[in-house]
Length: 151
Image (cartoon, rainbow, N blue to C red; front, side, top):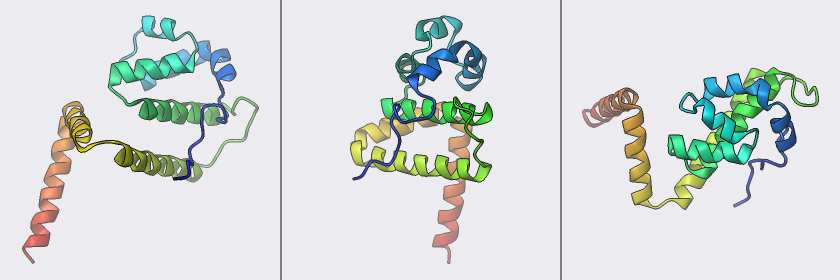
């Protein structure tokens, strides 16, 4: 399958720019990932790979998921601040389309790479992390299934 997502190297917010803007971005990073403490940010020290590793550790993300989340947030940050090279802002629709495409690709590769047991573990962790949302999704699915079977 042809890989469509960008790697860290071709992303507009490359490693050099990330390290250079580290101090200005710390507040923004704290708002994105509240589980990371000040010492965590000191350990990261502007290195994207360390940030990805800490997201895996603190949030239980798979490496690809952590990398995609970092890339998405950094892209949004770059778009809001005019980008590292003064790149123009993308429209909200283009950003939404890119996010949806990235999410679908991520889901596709996840389903292809994971075994059922790993998916069950991930689903359980997701349900524990978001219990109310999981309950609402379950109720909604139950309602839809009930409506479909009573016809």
